[in-house]
Image 1 (spheres, rainbow over the protein chains, first blue to last red):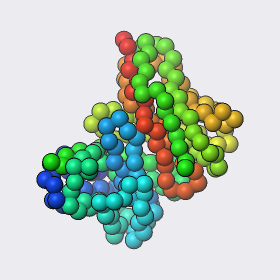
Image 2 (cartoon, rainbow over the protein chains, first blue to last red):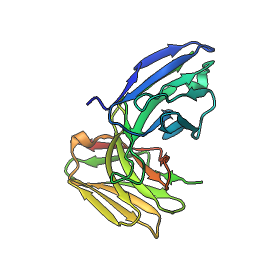
Image 3 (cartoon, chains in turn cyan, green):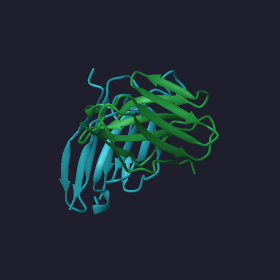
Image 4 (tube, rainbow over the protein chains, first blue to last red):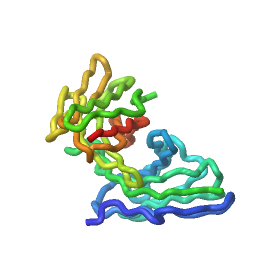
Length: 116
Length: 111
């Protein structure tokens, strides 16, 4: 049981390039999330999904896109990378909030992205 | 706006003593709260949670207290150990699928 996995661990992008951050979970969780964490800040929700084919915007969605074609995978797409997108990106998954574990979110190890 | 605030960015505690991390929140409808712990270069890991119908939840060395009248949440770690040195985030859920996270408190346990 690998939990939540993310690739790559680290990436340097040039301004204007695009890339996809991969996220997969093997816990059969319905809900998946993408967060970013900037230095000294909390986690900001970018996008989330409550099931395959269903996605919705979080707090900071601009500059990103997501898709959810399977229960297991939830890739995050960056188009036209900008220096403001330099951050650490975390993917998480959970069961629905009103379950016994209060929808506890399980996080991947993160992807560190540097846009120059 | 549903907010959680961790007003102390850092805290240092002697090994063996009690560590108390605090979190304040605004509004309160069907809330539940969670604490996460984060080591450098790793993702946050779940520590302990509490629903709004409870005042206290305990799990080993970790106890979370919820003071609904003061809209205040605290995490007690007793006794503190060197491996507890990490950044601690409080998070609040409010009846849907999204959590709101505080900015974190860096706990350093001094041997």
